[in-house]
Image (cartoon, rainbow, N blue to C red; front, side, top):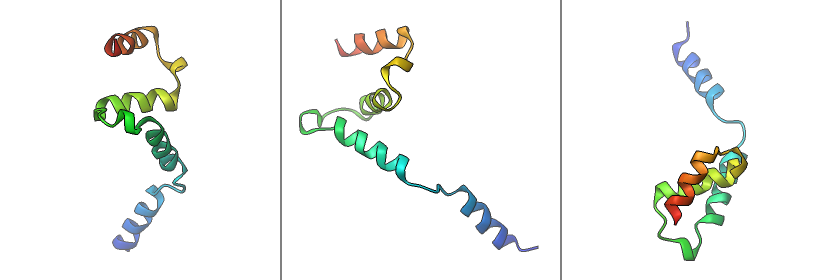
Length: 72
């Protein structure tokens, strides 16, 4: 009946309620990406952030070995 209102409600319901997760991720990125690590690639930064956020205990042994071998 009101297509524009329906679309506005759908957009409103999909919007995040809080920005805490995003702010936490930016804080993690700032802790990892220091002046000494300013040449990290986006791929390596994403991997280090994932390890920092999810924790190394969540990784299986094969993935841990792959990360260790990559950094050797």
